[in-house]
Length: 250
Length: 303
Image (cartoon, rainbow over all chains, first blue to last red; front, side, top):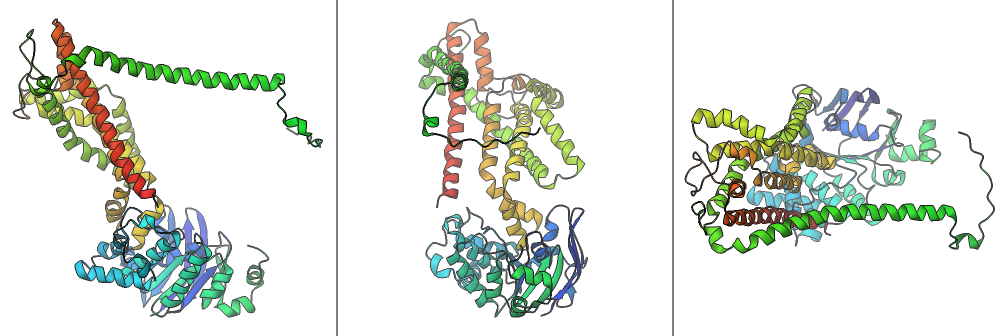
């Protein structure tokens, strides 16, 4: 699998929030996007599965090429893109009144992937992968709103995995979670990278250092630096990166 | 304006002691007056309702017997008889009105909330809002011209159509409001899974807004249950039981209207008894909605 971003620009109305981003995302590794608030890191990941344009007034130019196909090509349907490139959001967003089972099944149902026995197996497999199965297997029919925040977030990860994506985008997945739930999600990311390409946005530099292999540093809508995570945190080549990772601003 | 900030000496403990200065006294009086005034006005409003229900109850309760609920009206001036056809007729009218009014209202609301970014939506919204303010007899007149005159007959169907137009704005606007309240995160969850916009609305947004939409529908039904004016020109009323939606149809408000015009004491009292039934129906249905939707909400937020 190849995953390349070329000359990507993004706007909210008249405000340009991404300027000419070009980079390659490495398959089956974890890439972290860091930067202060408003640096464009969230917009960047939302452009990778065409979620950016779901916001009224939002616009994108440039190319995101996955396996030789530009996902912004006019012939490519955004729904198909989002099915192959899953997303987990900052705020855990399960459907609170639906059951745990239905929350995992909904993506597969919407896309007509599985039904009946195959669907139950898919639900179990996805929940197991998201390290949630043991905690919920006895109450699959209970509403998802009854789970704790950390469990809800892992449920959302299970839901994303159930549509069998190849890439998983995570937009600050732990910022609404307590330290223990954060640790569980980070452990999960570690487990998932054997099978998925993961891009994670984080405010937390320790988290980027812990979970990622590569790090992208964004500032004012521009990609300032990208490199191996260890390199970014020990020997950044840009002054701005150094100032940010050493906590001098942001 | 420039204000010099002056260093204040530290408060002595006596500053917190209750010393009634002219200033604090005036504030306490103003505050007390506001509390009393709003309380009195609220009480007056409540008293009207209590007096009204009490009076209707006192006038009508003796006539609220089982035969009154199960029998057809007696001949003019005779004792006995009931409002069974009117109760059935009202239920038929509510069903007919729901049949047209609920889908029209809900779909209009969905359009306004979800797709209505164009200027067409603001036109639709303006027209729906205008519809709310039109006197209901106009709707009766409209259906009279459109349905009653061409078909040469008053009918339950015509009554249902007139009532459905009254429902549309209430249902549409509440549907729009509650759909706007559905959190963006839920829509994004569905879209990010590869669902289309319409599928997202149908499978995720509408179920989340169900309680609010049901409440809006029940409000509209409670409103049309008591409508009289539009029925005068459409359903017309009838002393006989329900046979067909293409014939004149009895309705509780019409029956009450007829009876109050009667010179006979019995029928005046029967009008009060009929009013009691109507009031009870509306109160019971709103209690039922509160119970059903309230139950759902408890379950949603309960951990």
